[in-house]
Length: 268
Image (cartoon, rainbow, N blue to C red; front, side, top):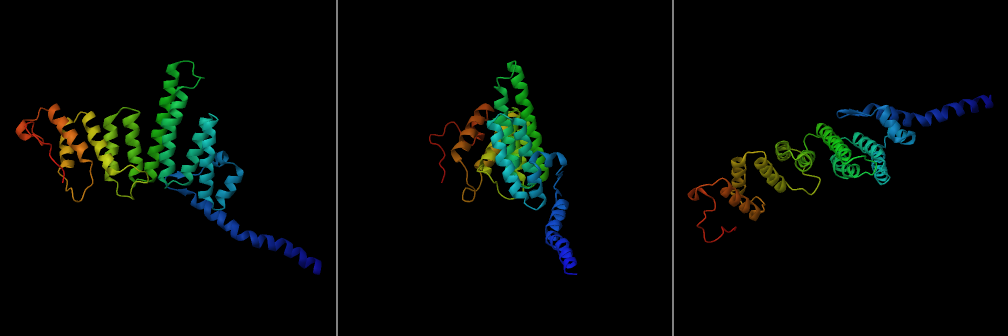
């Protein structure tokens, strides 16, 4: 009888101890379908079996951080596709963190994009340029998925605008995303790019897109803000207004800064 009791306990106790962990794994497995993405078998394969177990046990943030750090080592080894897969995995694990989407896209467009353009394995310069553009496209698609997951934050809209402005040389799409960044109603920017800078970028993109008069009116609107309430780089705004008044041949009597002014308008 004693032997039978011990045998039963040997079977029951481990099962009883494992119940909370199994419940947690099942709960976490159900929660892994969130945002607009789902953790797939391919993604689990890319992070490894050990990380997948930790993931299902509820350590999603820890796994995301580990996978992200690991991706940096792949860049140094010139294993860019592995780096991409890890950055994507980290973003999918923490889809509401703008950091992973933002910095991941930056790595693709700027770091990997440049690295593949000068890769000695390229047969021609044209091949390097083609590969670079492919990584720009990956960054664009990556940011778009980030925006779909975090539509209320300005960071990713600004990052997309900057990508179109700096890499694609497409001021019209850049203006659209700079404007979206200003209209976003979510939390403040997580990076050190102020809304003041984004306003200036939208005005410049508007001009480059062909709406010079619209840009002029935009700068004027910035100039006539309530200066007791709104921080601004007033010298920059004044310079842009004067420049566009010359470009547009604004009549002297309708200029914010008439030519016959002997002194520059001061800012109180």
